[in-house]
Image (cartoon, rainbow, N blue to C red; front, top):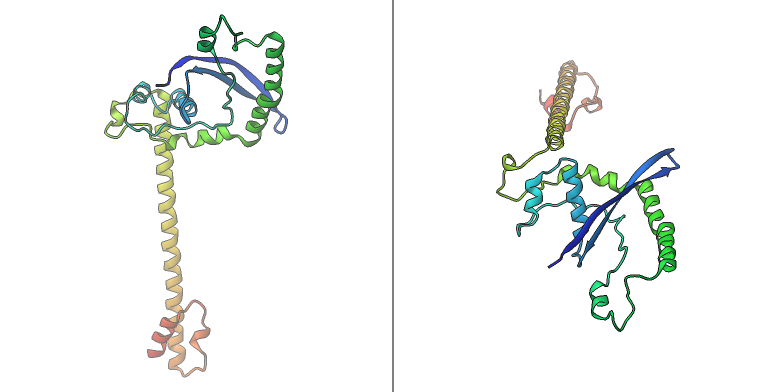
Length: 234
């Protein structure tokens, strides 16, 4: 069993994008737990973002505690950092014979924090600004159907943003169908024009052959061997 002891949100941080000349906003989430399973934190953050953006509601969050499988979006792992290991139980058991492991002293903690900011956090900012991994992941969020099989959408609690995202998806789907129909109509029209042109050439070829003209029908563009054979038989 994995236990989450604390989950809090830190202050926002504005980082300059020197290429585009604007500021990018970052936010830090601190999760303290007994232990974590593979991808557990990334799925927790993915579900949090999906809920905040209205892609799912309270019912989906409650369903994540059930044993049924769900299509939970997994947030990018770029910003995931093991910040600190806690030794509360060890310190409690051996507090009379050993020094604490949770507190390394102000000087060492300051150096560790400086290293973290310069070489870890700064690199996360740089890579995110360069690769846009979070923004690219957000574009795939609507592909996840966050629901348990057998639970209809009518029973789901939807937010205005969630309903808006559904409407946007349906509108885009309808637009793609319209474009597909238009392309099919254009294709049919082009085929009709090509067939009409071929029929006209075949008719001219028949007239020429009836007049014993030395012209070779194979030189007429837009005709196939089957149509040429048909012309000669006429």
